[in-house]
Image (cartoon, rainbow, N blue to C red; front, side, top):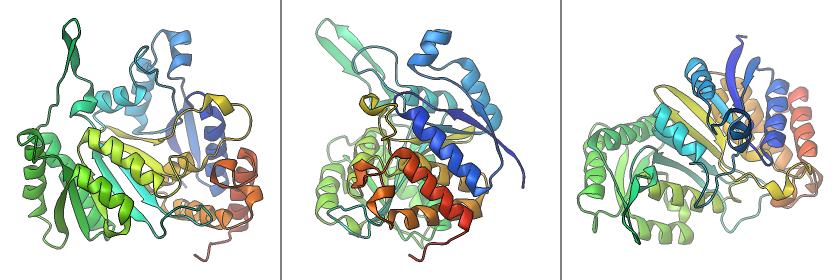
Length: 342
């Protein structure tokens, strides 16, 4: 089995704990990884004067793949979002968020199986804003044909490869007829190349209402950047929250797989954090680098462990266990080679 070089960004808060747990589980799965570990965020500022040092970007470009724990983003002040800088600097134009129901995580809905595809580089979320005069701030929403077309093509290609039947574009083209209109038109143009996949669209406010009344009607959702940021968190709430879903940022220059939840500094260092979200992201990462069988073994182990008693689940998903209890349980299943029956 080939050794993989992967950039590791543990982050801050609970980041180092959940990252260490996931690294241990990957080791238990038998995948041979050489990790290149770097600091980002506040820790990097104190050490290097930059929350995203150049050596981090160089490592990701060299290795083509990174695993990233949560990083605190100051609200209103302080340094710019590390996530946004990574996506823009490396042109990681795809944000991929599979959202699936899992055993023993009690939610209002069952059998959720959605994939959210979000354009990652432009729209209002890109943060192009300035103060026109004191008391007046302008934010620019940029939508381009190039970005809209390539994200639509990614969505349809993903659907084709993974047996998905329907892609729904989400927009506000009834009001923003030029910007969202361009996004929607690019989607429709690309859809003609995939006649076996149903292509439809929903206005974003209607979609949100539909998601909380009947989420099972949807298969894949394609959204521009800001809508995608909001809706991907909404869909996570359908299956138990940000602590249980995977996240990936993908482009031609590499891919960063990350926990999409916050850094939870209030429980940092207490062995309470749930590593499941980062572990789910690591499964996507393993699939991305061609380690299909170990990825499936970890996926099976997750299902099996979540089906066990509360002592191996962390408190946020109704258990009484610790970070280490969950980690040890996953590794035990992997070592025994037991497959889940679900």
